[in-house]
Image (cartoon, rainbow, N blue to C red; front, side, top):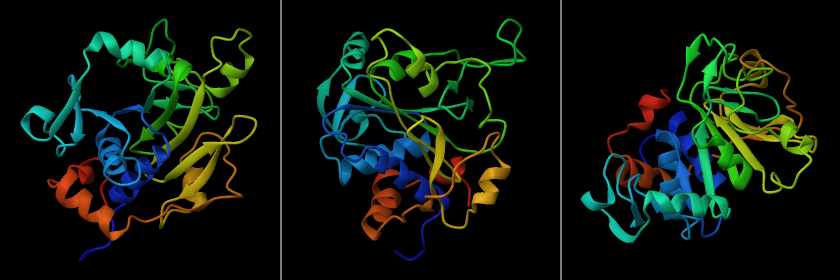
Amino acid sequence: MTTGPSRAEICAVACADAWRGAGEVLAHAVGTIPAVGVRLARLTHSPDLVLSDGEAFLMSDPPPLGRTAAAGGTIEGWVPFRRIFDILSSGRRHSMMGASQVDQYGNQNISAIGDWRRPERALIGVRGAPGNTVNHRTDYWVARHTARVFVPAVDVVSGVGNDRARAHTSTSLRFHNLGVVISNLGVFDYDDKGRMRIRSLHPGVSADEVAANTGFELDASAAVTTRLPDDRELELIRTVIDPTASRDREVPG
């Protein structure tokens, strides 16, 4: 390729790697960068991933961003909305959601900011976050890593964190599985106590920069550098998956 990878492309490859080894599961991606990443995963290392076009069609050849399978791409199946809950509850799904707030144990908030009784700002509600985190692997994508998002404690628990899952006494959370949090600064996973830590820093990002933009302490002792996309991945991102470069509008630079 004629130019090196952008920060958005590095983030997209990190998102793609989150689905590596997932097998034949329904992939759910919220946000431009995760949508690029899951298509990249399907076209490279994870061909068994099942992709929806965001409506009801399942795609064997994922169309570029912004186009449904009916408008470009090969349709290999159909799944109505009523079937999604069966797939979700069976664990045959792997979701990457957004987070308006996320804390050190992976509790996620997309519902409201402030006291839930009289919130300062109403967001989209808990949506599918409880079901996702209870039933199958869930990752999070944050386009702007700031201390307003990475907080000591979330205002409302939408997605269940590791501390709450481990403290729950029934078997209803036995399938709880938080994977990674990916932001424009790095990739984060969890230690054996369920606390978030730095897995990798994107090229040009320091641990001090991450610390300054995080509301809780992060262990950086094992952090490495996030891998760069190879030439084939760059070509797929730029010419097949996202030829209009919408990824750069979500993560500039």
